[in-house]
Length: 589
Image (cartoon, rainbow, N blue to C red; front, side, top):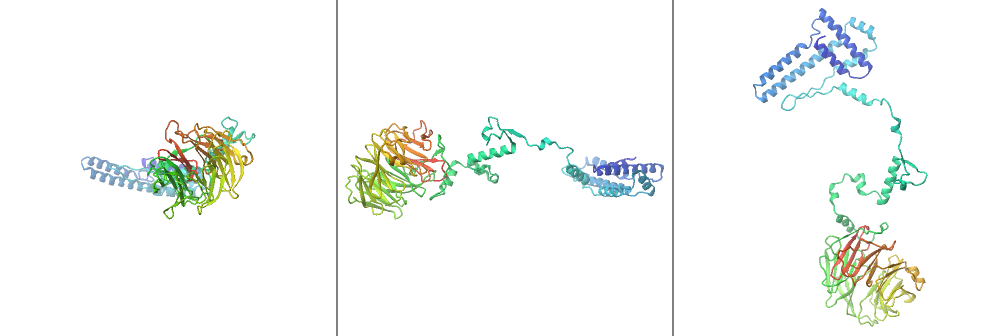
């Protein structure tokens, strides 16, 4: 058999591919046919068949070798073009040779057909025609790329179809262990906590994975943003945002929020230190008051330098909004009205006080109130409903004024000297703390004393506060002890037992305040530097990370306040600064 015949047979084998037993039989049939024609060509019955296709390929090969030798003496560009042309001629000659071979395979004489039917039968004639049609399909022409001659050999369509058929075939065997779910032993010491009952000694991997996801989501309060699939395609710039970006989202919100945070954990309070609230204008002297606006992102400061300043709280710059100056009037205390439209300020050595109307931009002096015989008006409290103003006078007198008209309504008196007072959240009662350590409870409507009890261990009363949910009453004494009572026991017993006695201060407790959610109680003393403690109320324990150990930052505390939704905590000190801290547990201002 000649080289042309062998190449044709190889082509037939390549074109056939492993399509099954029928194609293999057809290929064997073609081999027999080529063998018969080769013998006929040798004996001379069909001259020229066995040698068909040899001459064109030999000519193309010789021509290519001549061009290669001649190209060594020619320029590189002409050589490349010449080689490409010769390669195209060789490809065309090969295609013509392939077509002649397929045509020769299709032409079968009667004697060959009868012999094939005797050997193979006549059931494969249709498959033979199909195989010949597939072999006759045009092959993709290889492309020449780069500087030299490079032929890209690609598989024929028959080979691609054969590969697809192989991929679609079923696997030869299936391992049953692969389909079975593997069980995990839940009695292991690291997995006991995930068991919901004693019967769950084993769980499948899928169920264990789902249970781990549920526990993670419960601990995180839902699926965090970074774990959501829809958030994975977001820009990478969100990864470089600082903690201040979280504060920016907080500070875009104002007004009354009805959503509440989850319970505050004990031990460590997550917080960050911001620039002072009055960074753009420090007070020249002692800062006696710091208070957040009840509905806006504003904080007020007032001090002995006779000024009241308003600042916008953003946690970054805290720009100043406005400052007013009260001539010859060192401020003892300043307070926002309940609606946030006014600021009431009392002086250190005056019997009058000022009202600053922020909406009208006017300062209204309130001269001596008729019926109030006091030399100095210093300490005062405002009722949460905005109806009353309580002036704390000397010799135990309490003067109840109308907030609207600033006129006297009634006067009450305690035994001894009153040092501090506080309204209940519903404005129905008043708690008055005397210097002798007794607490009087007054009914606002009738102005009568409802009850009196003694603060346990108190030598001299200093400050008092009632929680926003009317659950606790905190009394601070000169010994530094802050006793925490429940309101129920205060109304029933004469000598109630405190639920907790806070003894973390070594000097007189001069300031106590609750946060709006009644989860934190802040206690402080103005007699010692860094004498501030934050108490976790559900557990009655002190947060260990505030103030920062061995870092002098707060100095002498004069006043403290929480923002309306506990997002910020501010401390006014004797250096004229209103220190600002971001409480990260709370989401809102």
